[in-house]
Length: 341
Figure 1 (tube, helix red, strand yellow):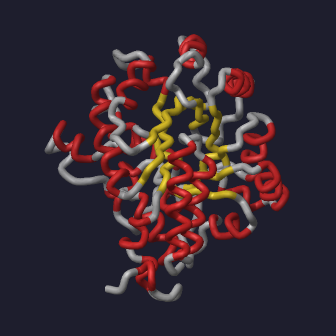
Figure 2: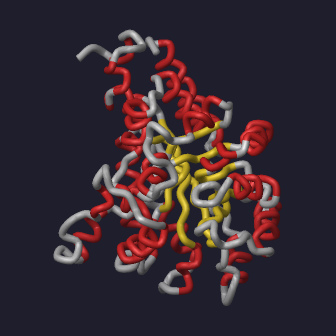
């Protein structure tokens, strides 16, 4: 096979895994629990988990978010019972990302889990960070759902604002729940504590939810955000404010947010000048890898090698990695472009 770096732009080799694997990448929308390696469940119960979920099949489509939620809760509950279990899962997750030439990762863990297992949130954070391999930068976010500000959680959140190695907060949960009044205040406090803030919006909710995340929560990193495409004024807002959408196309297709990769809104958002990145969301459920995401956009959505490189570049521009890591990755991407793309 010819070297994909030195063949014409129209050559199919440009879209082959060999080319994709050479691209330095980021993974910036990853739920650590949802990335649980399936073999750990198989080890836990070889009979119950004899086969991967049916949702790994390329043609699988969830009937509703409730169906997805029921599946993921049933899979995650048996494993995530301690900080040590988080460490074990994270070590495999990060190793496999490194094998795909991922240099920088932003992942979240579900902070309200501290109400149900014998582990403090800071212990879980430390366990995850201790699993990071050499050569990879990982930033860990605390995931909060829209209705979790009850019971012990206000105190847990206040404590988390003081955790030195916590990168920030990410708002999770189904968008049918309204944004509660506590959320903008916590997001403001987080930024005042030098923490980063993100929010899931524009997945099942509409473009107005994306606007709400930007204008009311003040985030500049939106997880999903693809429904912004339905309102040109929201697309213009994203471009004007320099908001990054951390998009997970395969997840979107399997959950019915987009009918196919060919019809996925990422094409229109990218062409409109919105900064988009690629990630996997919950690979335990969708059976996807980051390489699959790049290859799928190339094969089905017509993304050229230059466009794939731009998506990769966007991750390094948006992330908060050490500057030497950013510069080195951007230089490698530029070299790939000069090599024939």
